[in-house]
Image (cartoon, rainbow, N blue to C red):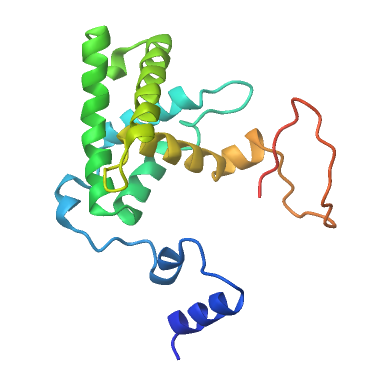
Amino acid sequence: MNRREALNMVALLMGGTVVGGTVFLEGCKTADKKVAAALPLTADQIAFLDEVAETIIPATSTPGAKAAKVGEFMHTMVTDCYDEKDQTTFIEGLGKLNEASETKFKSDFMKLTPEQRKELLIGIDKEAKDYAGSKKKEDPNHYFTLMKQLTLLGYFSSEVGATQALRYVAVPGKYEGCIDYKKGDKAWAI
């Protein structure tokens, strides 16, 4: 019996399948290599993703997404974990986001002020939500939805996000199933 069979049997015994089990069992490498010509992303594209992420999660009293190097995280996730369809959507989305910037502000996204970037991304986010509401199962994901999800995942799973934006206990004590929450408290990191 190999590891994959053993894990499948354990999952069945536990009453269901493991969410994301294929990624867990097979690793995070995608078999699709057709998009590989557009990957890896350039340093400028990664810097672009850092600026998009920083607009979504800006630095305040805690560091922002750029400090967590979310652009590099997005690059790794798209390259290693996304299927060909989502890789294509994501890569084309870099151009679409810049086109939206040119259309709305007559300027490249990287040259916009933080306020203009925020305004642009709020509009694109609304467009993505409208698209998700009418999207059929076989339709591709919206590029901004992918970027936003990766920003949140990358930031809150980074050291910066987990230790400074969330409450973090490196070595937790006993299990407490019910802890009082006061408005304004940080959420707990896992």
